[in-house]
Length: 382
Image (tube, rainbow, N blue to C red; front, side, top):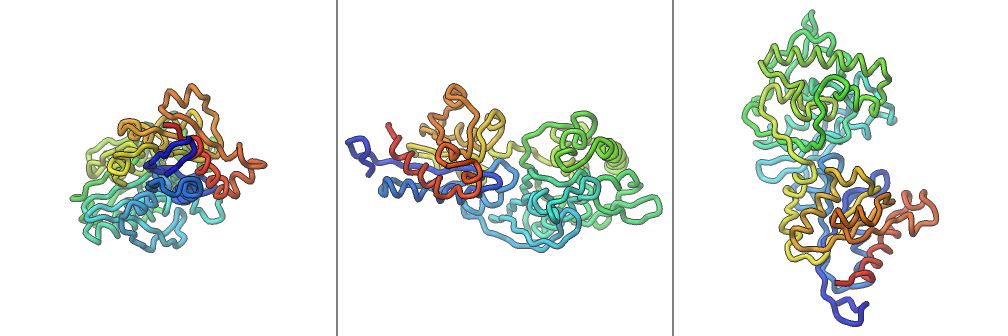
């Protein structure tokens, strides 16, 4: 029982934050908030349900919801050995591109815009198919590559060959020399499995709104390299069309994650879903929020972008539909009270308001989040 208002109040709260990027993962945020709530109201019922928006942290979110972890050896964006974990429940696997082919696993953190690839992702998907999985969910965020999904197909057993019949090296730049796509060795499970991608962007593969032009600079590409990658992707798209009969370049979201799903989409139907909506479905959030009085969500920075397809808004929409009040937590927040109210969020607690400086808020968020948990109890008035 919490008694801060002169009366006993029994409260059921669901903690559903996203990660504080570069500071603390979503599960850690939820744990720290739960500790603070327990300090101030030990009899409150607290359920942890960390979330993600379909990118980095997606596998962690579904594992926290009780899915089984599967560990597999694969390779990173430039071929270095990695061990990654995906999640499985029954015949469904959840795989995260960022774990094997993301910016965060580049050796030394050095961008490699021309030769970073997605072969490692293909290896992970092949492992899942080998184990009998019939549905593969792929979170696309955080890509280091602009290879049009050629690496993904290679990891699944296909070969991308040059005019002399030699396999091309990894990366988007090499696609300018692609002459043939050999599908003889493609994993047989590809043709029968269902593929679902968590993706919230609608960019085409090519042109000024395409994979290279919009996202290449985020991966270290300069203007000349952007032009080189765009031309190489155009050549690759033409090869896919001539090989499979499917033109995927103008598909909604074809440019996501450096065009990662284009190779696969040229072979089989791929379903695109909103990242946070998919994660909430996979984690059973609708059941978790049923009967909740309060839902606490948030991310490292709440801003205008948070209002469009990010995890806090997906959580808020679901929570409000279930009749729960919503409070947000963030490292920092640039949204005004009117913006928050319009979004359905009744208030926000920021770490920068508690920390002596921004560096402390980033480096040591746990104790601050614990204080926020207690403050949420003290501010509860329903």
